[in-house]
Figure 1 (cartoon, rainbow, N blue to C red):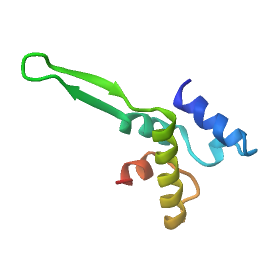
Figure 2 (figure 1 turned 180 degrees about the horizontal axis):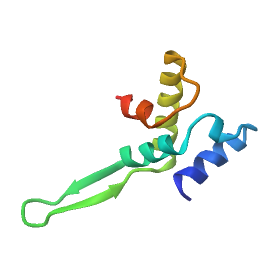
Figure 3 (figure 1 turned 135 degrees about the horizontal axis):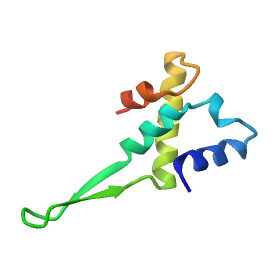
Figure 4 (figure 1 turned 120 degrees about the horizontal axis):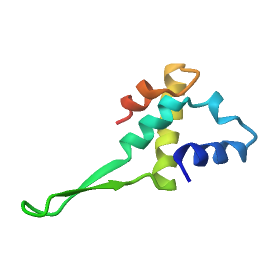
Length: 85
């Protein structure tokens, strides 16, 4: 599943339309933040690694919702995701 589908599923289970909580820019930013690089040494190069499995997505969403609440933001967007440490 895509991150958008996963987030929609999670919020639908609680009867909430995900787009009232996070916009597509926020979802795209989560996907970008959850990309990693694995190095194999000088001669073998690097490989991209997708770290967007459910536990990481959930953790990022919780951090984003907490930050949004503390700042009084109504919706999670790209800028808010970028502020998460």
